[in-house]
Image (cartoon, rainbow, N blue to C red):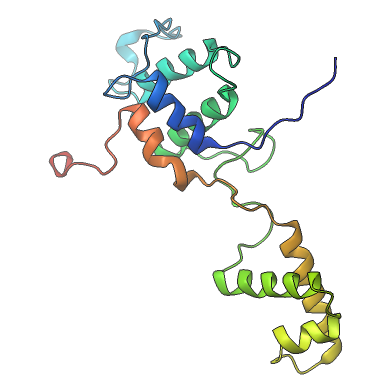
Length: 197
């Protein structure tokens, strides 16, 4: 059976679908999923009296998403919705995870390497666009990097900048981009109430 190419993960769209098509007005899943209570290994009286914020709603949503058929929901990406909710909940409760090997897509990481600021991104884009216009590395270095005194170093930097821009992942989702939707689904106030203090 031929494998189909997986579309890039879009957690914002996946959570918007949950809010629009699968949630009640308060953000809980429709229909409510009866999740079996977790097995308690110890006496219930010895357990803490609280659960981390959003735990019951998270359990209900993960069980609901797990039972969905993507074909019946027009290709809805259940894996990304599951991943986005779980990572948002972990992040909310201050639970960190290793940056590699835990999740197929780690939505809290910004990608590989050091983050690039806006001016650095603009410089990379300029070098890339000049190169696409057919300019030589020498011409690109003169136009984009006039402050670098060493001509050879400037050419090397121009080439590196253009290549790094070409390899970038535009529109990579960040956990900040879909946090509000995840919190609404989990029944969590976006900002703590002053009554809590």
